[in-house]
Amino acid sequence: MADQKQIDASVEALRIGAKMKELREKNRYTFQDVAAKTDLTKEFLAQVENNEVVPAVATLLQLAKALNVDMSYFFQDRAGSEKIAVTRVHERTRVERRPHHQKGEVNYIYEALETKKTDKHMQPFWVEFPPQDTSEMVFVSHEGEEFLHLLVGKLEFRSVDRVEVLEPGDSIYFESDVSHSFRCLGEEPAKAVVVVWSRQ
Image (cartoon, rainbow, N blue to C red; front, side):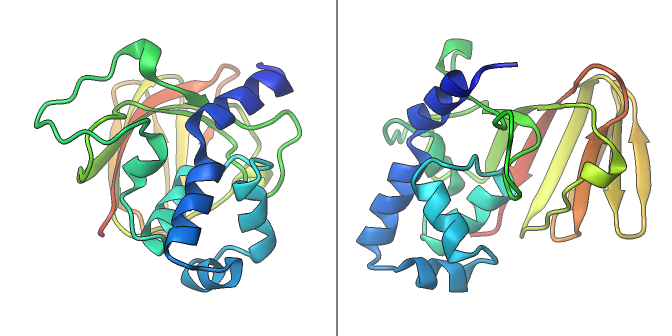
């Protein structure tokens, strides 16, 4: 596992905290304003802005909607309006939990697979899910739809009333306003391609 400095560097490279602050100030929003538009606390928002926590994809979706941007804004170095955008493997930035992560932080590793095109309708990610117990599962929900195609490992999907176990080659598509969570069932991380679509 990467050490604290490496993780902090990857989060800093994305400038999520700085971008959030820029958008908040541009919209003249206080932390209370953003908290009212999301289900996030003022304290948590301040931690995201100060790069003290690693926000999950669902959190970034909430922030994007509250701050009037597409979620891709948080992954871009610069805006691009091309109809075709290529993202090379070395251009991706890994975002992973800290060794002693806090509540609300990601419990998985993710990389945005597309970082250049603006105003896109889908957000594709490479996601690695570490092994964990049922008690460690964090349930999230957000507007939109989600697609996951499992490449490696064994992964459990849970909602309030459904449990599905996915094997390599299996896929799941669901409306993401359903409270849901994933957990790896094997000893090695499960790896998947995840595509998120959010209503703007």
